[in-house]
Length: 387
Image 1 (cartoon, rainbow, N blue to C red):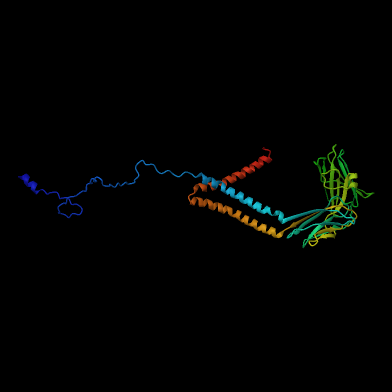
Image 2 (image 1 turned 180 degrees about the vertical axis):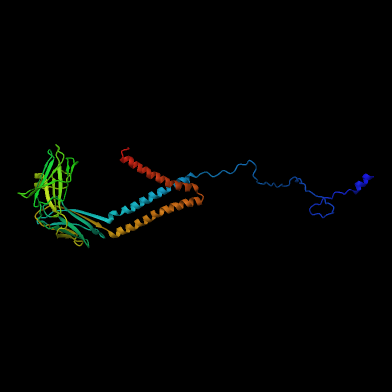
């Protein structure tokens, strides 16, 4: 009995309470829906859930685009070369139209007058002129000056009586001596310069000084110099400058084609040529002209010596040159902007995801630097005898 009482008096465990059920309410049965089999002939719907499974491979990353890389590598170099060629063609295509050249040879008529027809291009103006004798002449120098209005004046220096009078030139190869004699002054030359040449034009010895001697009885002065003796024939030219009289004494051999000074028949017989010229300002007079109206160059030199002259005239088109200069400014502006465009292209390539193109553009600058140093090395090897 005691056990039965104990069982009756023992508290019972509270009944479970489910969500949505009030306390003390009888539990409601829970119904679970069971999948129903599809009837035969009925269309069944299949649902597939796309979820990655363990061990599934990740998507393959895109490959490096070599085509874009090579475009970026060579495109800047090609653009620079192309623009350089265009600029060169544009600058040289009309060069012959900007400058004009007229060359003619004039000979004297029976009266000693010189004349030649020279036409100047339309829109051109005379820019430069020169007149040179075809052979040595004892007459005073003839030259030309460009004036306004496409006019050229032909002028001639007035005859001047020089203070110094040249006498003789003597050269002794075996003893290694030379001597230049003259009179008219006992002054020592302020400057002496010259050269000794072989038959082939090779420099044998330079002349920088000579001993000055004066014969008091005849007032003849001598410039005596020495050089290493030799058994071969040498040719000499020597200049002595006298600042006291603004004169220069020139002496040279006649037989060598490597010496600039020309000799006439008389001088060729002696084997040397000697002359004295003034330097500095000298008085001159007008002896002829060329005007745009008649297009005839004429001049009448003073003196009795008759020789032919070479006349060279250069003309210039100012307006055409200015238009070409404006084109050059445009190309210079483009070249100045190219570094900025190059940097902008690199930034744009990486921003737009074209990394291959960007790396190609960056590599192009390195390739240009390598080409530059390679070219310098090639020049050094070429001139240094490396090949």
